[in-house]
Length: 404
Image (cartoon, rainbow, N blue to C red; front, side, top):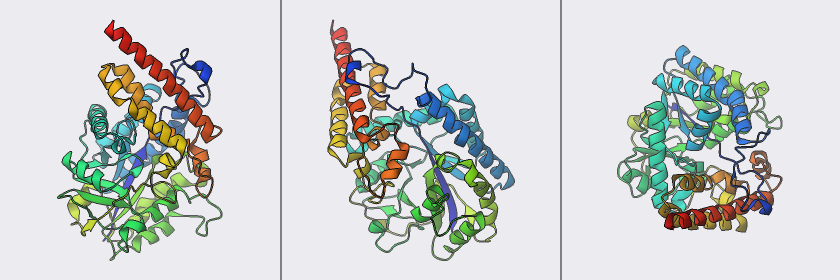
């Protein structure tokens, strides 16, 4: 009997504008908040809210009322919640309405969608605290399951997350670490006690998230009855089918005219046709099924690219240099006791900035180019490092003023 577990990631970064060397010392508006144009953060957030969040939320709300057993889960970055509060408050209200149904679980993550676990455990824990506070403020909700940025995961992360009190953590279900096991079972991270590990069924998830509108795909077009049959095939050989994907799949990555919303509307009814199928949130999956033993993920596993590692963010010298420089500022920023500087420093940690610097141009190149607001990875790096150089000047000036 497989339970169908939907998890959607909702995230938008504060994108850095094209920031030149001539702006250093003169312009401290790194994210273009004072500039109105069609690629500004405000414009992007409003566009995605209109194309994805609002219509998808309406579909989910209707589905929950049509099928009271239908359930989903979300993880929101703090950066998207801030921008929605500012630029699209009606979207925040629509998410609140969904959570209030009781059929929606909210997961925790790092507030600034950062890779901080791999650079500073103290910063990682602080961002989780900030995230928990934001989720409590907006949704009156206390998450019990954790999702790290980009599904970046390893044994050490699970150990720390268990110490923080979470009962579950989610990760990519990649064959390399499964070693013949199925992602459709609940596992226990190595060297932990009670925390459980839920793995994404990436093949079925990516059929929706990436392949849905691909006319060159042998299974195109994908309709709900066909997909439900694929899920049904797990009966007798799995506990849960974890369908994890970006929420922007609906209406943004897969446009409305592809039929993605109709697919979503029809899917619960098709899945229910098999009497053994049901819907569960991550917490319910964890509470319902015993783990099937330990899973050892000794290196870093993510949900990105064919390598499923951190190379999308740390694979070249530009990315390594930028990450090193931003985390080198930790002690100086935190000792400044300046909340605005801390916030800016943390916005500069968001993983997207380093993803835009990726220089992979093979099977994953088109994906990177689609998400980047820059003409090239080198332009992304230049804008980032120029911004960082100005931020250092602002930081040193603030310290001098505090001393005087």
